[in-house]
Image (cartoon, rainbow, N blue to C red):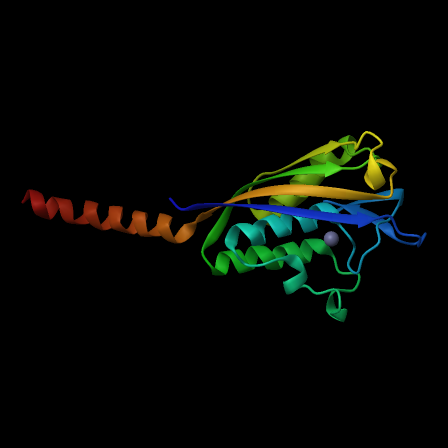
Length: 180
Ligand SMILES: [Zn+2]
């Protein structure tokens, strides 16, 4: 079995624009200030995407979805994540799991954690776990100037797996012949 690990990091500052909606892990947090960014600025989904791209050796989010490209203005980051999962599948990589640590003074994530995990797990096709913690008042994150997220992703090669299944299948087919 061929396994690869990747890590991803993303950070967005809160927007001055009162019309920006806060989206984290594909969930809208109504009534909370939104994050600044070219897309929907979903910092958790971006970190997951970065970790997956890194694990597969496929570069980073900015290369594939540049913020100079009008196609990605206001983009739903879950669709970017779908595209990343497709890129991995095209290279015969399947996701084993992703674990995220979100650093945010606000909002409180606990009430939405299960929903975020379900949405991201469905998109990625593997368990995605999310842990929230505060920055203890340290630095810009501690002063609620933005939200950051770290993610670790494990992927495995589907090519090796299917090759093993094929060879096991042909071995069991030929073994009665050997017995004769
Ligand atoms: Zn981002």
